[in-house]
Length: 355
Ligand SMILES: [Zn+2]
Image (cartoon, rainbow, N blue to C red; front, side):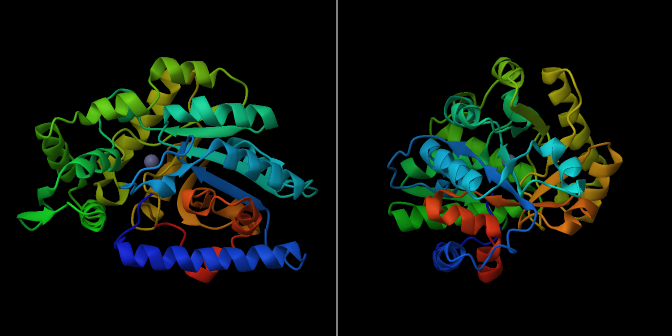
């Protein structure tokens, strides 16, 4: 998702670093020098999957890939010997002494409707299982998606008055650079404590500008009937992603546990069975730590995924509640990058995958 302090310049620098890392690794991997680096496979994170739309202000571009890129990625990974594995089956797969190849595991966060429209046909074409992590508050339209609200609001206003935590401030949001800077300020404010109140203030501002934040959710995210239908197809699985999509590390222990428990119950109401998998919202080290990992285990999940970048390694079986993932990222939609991404090396070179 959005990591802390994504100042536009830093974001650009980091993107360039990852990109040159990807180019280097893709060169090396084609020369066959890297066969040991891919470890036991990778869990990929996707969000939106949809045809590309040219937008000037597109702060969530890294959360969007095209169906063609997904198709090409799966083809490339299969050619490289990766074996499709459903997330819930991963512990058994990893425990096999004679695995037929590294695992490719696909996960999609937040339950966007385009997952059904544009990703499902690709997964079905290739016979690849996938897990969609849903937040109960999005499914039921009781909670907004702050980054979608912010994108729409900032794209249409020339000035943005907001309390980022130090009283009201007015930012110019006329130029693209100003809009990105305001988005970054919101992102930074939202990784701090008090996220719920900040989102509520953002929703108020949006409503005052004629935008309905839960209307955006209704437009973008699958509802219960759609999820039930999708979950009945053989390759689709649903996992828990809390109710309110808050940074769990900032909640008190009771609230944190209740977010997780209620979201598992909500998934069970839709699919008829308790989910075995959980994704921590935002999912980096600032959003989930040992307290959350232990809660996920104690609450009966089989495994839980973070957004900390990395491949599957031998030690993954001992860390099933803090599994790393690799973002199939809208910035790097080149087929030759996929093998390099799956190796995990570019993240080691650049420090972090999350923008
Ligand atoms: Zn999410």
